Length: 436
Image (cartoon, rainbow, N blue to C red; front, side, top):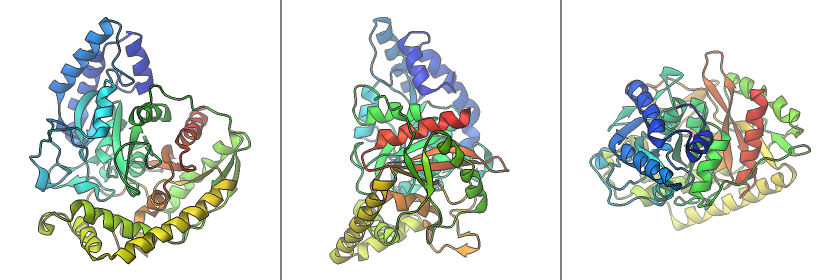
């Protein structure tokens, strides 16, 4: 039952073919068996989960259902404040912090009837795409315990991949919903900014699941829709750009090889696939300035000697920015977005590997070189994601295959601003195509 799709569980619960308590017990068994070695769920709330499952079952007995997530086990990223549940942000500064309120993301999931299993691990303040912190330690990749699960929504991805939960929320600045989805063989959507609550120009909150249907279910809840829109469509004649080389964005050969095998699936769907690449000039310059500004705004009051080095570096860079620096970054971003929007007038979607490398050693904080090219900072290896983040468009990571070592590789499908359901539709069609 714990690997049953969330959409199917929701149907079975509504039909009273199973109870919320039965669903919960199945997921609790997986947590007891897998979580000690993986460290995905770091604050565990089984008693709360039992109370919520019983509430869902009592409502079902009366023919009432609590919402789209009625009885579904979920967990919240440890950056989301949860009333009465410890929220650490992965930082010793907040190791004992218990909020008196829920964020809007948590409120919407609660109102939809979810069953809360606890909090999922994240790097300190969500900085970086490798999930480790001084409070809870490392979260391991379920496909190889010696590898990273990615991040910053790493605990969420691992919990989903192993059947500990049915759905998870996450957040994404430079790839934090897409990178761990790719590394753990699940699905993560970075929504168009503003579709879901919270966030900024760069940072968005969004859904993770084991397939596009499940992601669509949670997206509907986060977007405060009363039902899940039908997002199937015919893609015959749809123009898709298959991204080639992008300056400053090297890929390990094995990643390209696995991703390129998927191209034929889009052509089999009737898509017109061309090798074409938009002009990403200024993506790096604008993203780095706006990221540093955001870190300084959010964390400039933190004691620098008590946060990890990469967080301190971002705060220090943000503190040095002038109004001119920030305005110039926005001008560069506006030009970039206009160029890519013009590209997307021709190509409704563009596709590229989600991450430039496969999962790497868990003892390595971040990737320092690709194909012999040195990478000076901790985010350089994530350009395949953050060059997309700066555009303000929806981007989906879907599993597309495995390396010869059996490690997952994700494919990133990028759509036009506001076309989140179309991106999910193409992702779902691709999933079905590769499933045969």
